[in-house]
Image 1 (cartoon, rainbow, N blue to C red):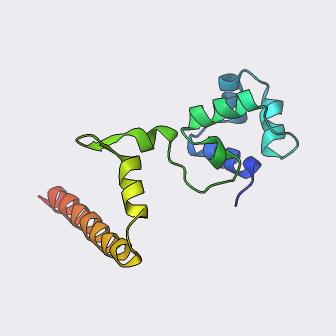
Image 2 (cartoon, rainbow, N blue to C red; image 1 turned 180 degrees about the vertical axis):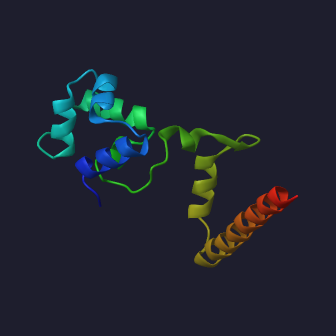
Length: 124
């Protein structure tokens, strides 16, 4: 798993921000951001939560405890009728390995069909 310092650099650069830009968001100095990114210091809990909120990730992601960059709000999003993304994930966790594999094939096919459909629209 990546370290906090590496993840912070990556997230900041993904947003095309300088250390100074991020420092302004957090109301700290650019030197503080530099210290975070060089592994000299870790932010306090308040700043850690502010960073997670700003970048739309979990504190666990920032601390290198999980690899998912999903926003915490993602699991609560309604995907269909009254079913959230979290509901679907819980359902999938209960599937047998064979059903999980079948679902993977179906999703790959749907993604491929979407890409082909978008390509065909651009050609027209």
